[in-house]
Structures are given as C-alpha cells and as structure tokens.
Image 1 (spheres, protein in one colour):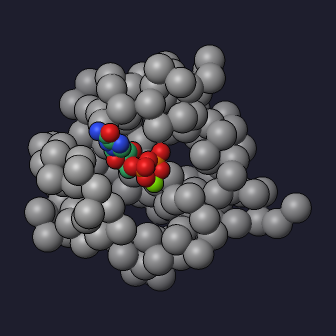
Image 2 (spheres, rainbow, N blue to C red):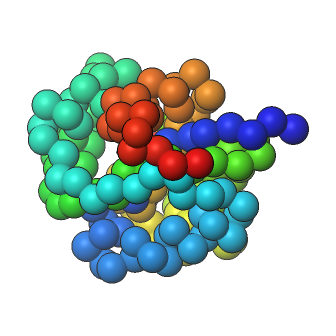
Length: 140
Ligand code: RTP
Ligand code: MG
C-alpha cells in the first residue's frame, strides 16, 4: 500500500445544492484526507484546458459549459491508494450504473451533472493537481 495524492472537483451541480460538505464527508469517511481545498469559478479557457483530453468527444462543449455554470471546489486528497479509493467512492460516471452508497449514486443528477471529478491515474493526478494548486497551497 502506498500513500498517494489525487485530485478532486466538487462540480457545479453539487455546489449549487449546498452539497460541498456532504460530498466532502463521503470522501473523508472513505479515508481520504483533504490536504488542499478552494472554491473557484473556472474560466472557459481553464475548463477547456482541464478537459483537453476530451476535446474530440461529442459532449466536450456541453461539459465545458456545465463546468463553468457555477462555482466548483477543487481539492487535493491524500491517503492509501488515494486514486483508486476516490474512484471507488465516486462511483460510475453514469449515476444509473453507480453502486449504492457512492457519491454519484447518492447525489448525481445525470451522466454530465455527476457531482464529482476524480483523477483516473497517479500520473494524471499529478498533472491535475499542478493545474490548480501551487505546492505551498497543499498542507499534508
Ligand atoms: P471524471 O473525469 O469527471 O472524473 O469522470 P469520469 O472519468 O467518470 O468520466 P469521463 O469519461 O472522464 O468524462 C468526463 C466527464 O464528462 C461528462 N460526461 N458526459 N454526456 C455524456 O455522455 C458524458 N459522458 C461523460 C461527465 O461529467 C464526466 O464526469
Ligand atoms: Mg475522467
């Protein structure tokens, strides 16, 4: 087992419904420590850059518009196997397919408005953390 850091976003559908605390509680209950957190309203350029890997996907434009439709909370999470652990507690992308008790099963509105983002690999976690945080903003 290895202590890892991963990157999380509490998406606009969740901040709009005052679910920042409830989502964070699920992360903490899963053994993930919030070592950095800030509420931001992404610019279009920031969202497009963040989701650049999806730029050829049919949902790219809608996804960017959704992500800039309200504030988000970007977080760095630390814990044992944090990348996989976070993916487990998030649940499947489409809440209809997500397991009971997961964040998306409990809170998500749709496949797009699915309440959270989480890095899908350790390599991407590092890139995504660096995209939003300066090293001194992370307190382990
Ligand atoms: P994420 O990157 O946000 O953690 O989610 P994920 O890995 O489970 O899903 P991914 O395939 O990377 O897609 C990124 C986000 O795009 C939106 N999406 N919309 N309309 C659609 O068919 C569709 N598919 C994906 C979701 O917000 C998804 O989280
Ligand atoms: Mg993804």
